[in-house]
Amino acid sequence: MARLLTGNPDAGATNGIDWIHDLCNALDVAPLLEFGITEVHFPELIAGAKRASSMKGNPVELTGEELMEILRKAV
Image 1 (cartoon, rainbow, N blue to C red):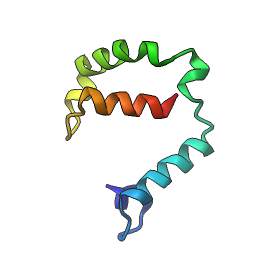
Image 2 (tube, rainbow, N blue to C red):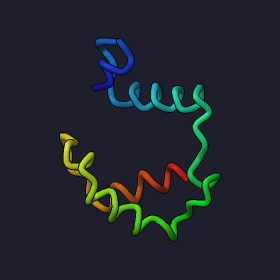
Image 3 (cartoon, rainbow, N blue to C red):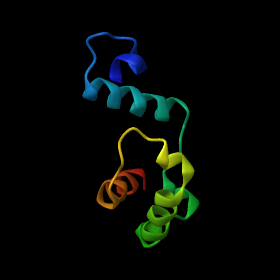
């Protein structure tokens, strides 16, 4: 996947993460905290995400713990 994002055939996961981080910075993506979202909201967000049709199309099913970690990093 990182190869597709970066265009580098030798790219690994870390390169893909760096690419996404740089993209978020370039697009000035605000952290969730700026929208009033805190850890108190995470259980409801995770429950909603697990029901969402978009999550059913993911090639890897994310656990509640993985979703929690993603949200913690996005605050």
